[in-house]
Image (cartoon, rainbow, N blue to C red):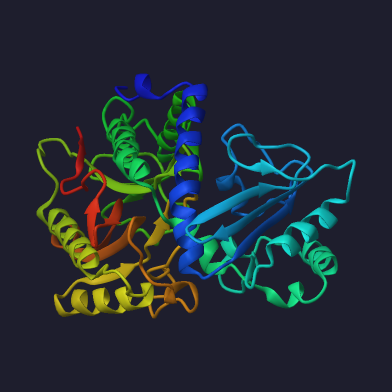
Length: 416
């Protein structure tokens, strides 16, 4: 496949990720600390009980937090002092300030705090976002005991800071992201072709494992098991009792796949149609269903505006879709360091009335989203049977506007 030769060696990938991290620490983090009016941010965790934020703050060669890792960020006007109180240092990224032979780790932290006298100290505790809730109960107790008063009273939730750090993409990341998404499109196009699928022989599970193996062989890390679903005349998406899994002519296939590369995630869903003998195109009813789903994508993107909450976007988009006669569901999510990433949810498949808390968070600039939705339409050629078109494409919110990172599906992949 064309993309395989462009996947960089691990050493080169690490160099790029480290370069991106330095830029993010020097430019994005100071802006976020200022935005949140945070004088100090503490990230504290232990090996194998890592804070959801910690790995995004460490250089690429890091595999875990290593024993107890403490990072302290102290704001000094427009600059940020980056300190590590850890047995293993991160030279070039953080200044090591703890000597284990001289003082206890938390004693060192208490001293660092007293010397800087911060008025607001952010810690990772949140009742809404898991991304902002990485400080364990034990570490919280140790922290409070070490700081004492008045500093324990200055501890505040760093929830929005954690989300802001994880969701915002740098200019370099936004430049690289479209190629990652294009790689995903290439894998799907190959999977949905006669090179992989032999009607009457291949099963949906064969295609699932081909996708998984292809990603692994290329050096891409799948962040969930891919899926392949079949809809056909007489077999709907909801049919779950012993559904047919052998792919046959006349089938509408659906895939869902995503991977990590260069520390960023993709997430995509597309469809293919298996031509019957004598057919050169899908039934007109299926094409009409895809047009409804594309129209829903248009509406969704138009409603993604800076400052609006995910719930506001959901309500506005669903109302417009209903007014246009589209039977719609929307369940979009942020994309970035994680697959289901930090930022506002725009619905869940089982929460089309909004998502309290996570859906109330506002849309910010320089963020990436997986635009995930479906439109249902009856297909005359299948005796009026309902068909669900499920699409998922990746898009960026930059400069106040939404744009697809690598286009979208507007015609079915055809398997002959």
